[in-house]
Image 1 (cartoon, rainbow, N blue to C red):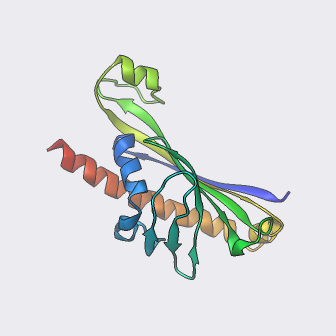
Image 2 (cartoon, rainbow, N blue to C red):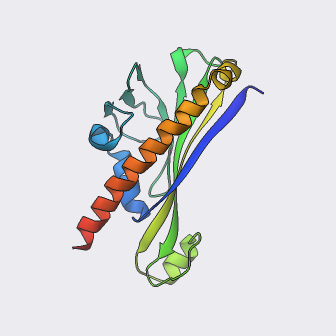
Image 3 (cartoon, one colour):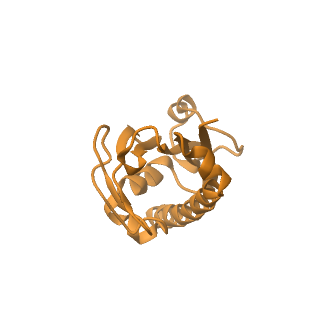
Length: 170
């Protein structure tokens, strides 16, 4: 098999708009994201953005920018299609709506039928890898390292979003 998915999830006590605004403010990634030392660009479908990480830089293309729901970019590592390609997605799902006592996904119909604020969201942070190098990435444990890095990013994003949400309640 020449593809693999690395997926992590975390619940965040913040609404989707807060989370999405943090994810799309690339100029501030260095303030909270432990994996990204610098980021630039506009997260608009079709646009290239730029990241500097520990050992390199890369320029993925935004393929999904669905406000308050999903941000996805595609990267072709080393610029060679088919070698190692990846789609990185942040998917935001509202979970608890103000006034609801139950946990679980809250659909857009529920939100519109019961005006108020979403108090908690789930963030799925995932990357789909495909290409001829994926079996080697799996074999040498690279995908396990990626998963551990995603969990660190999730925790950092949770902290930042919850701080913003708390500040906005005052």
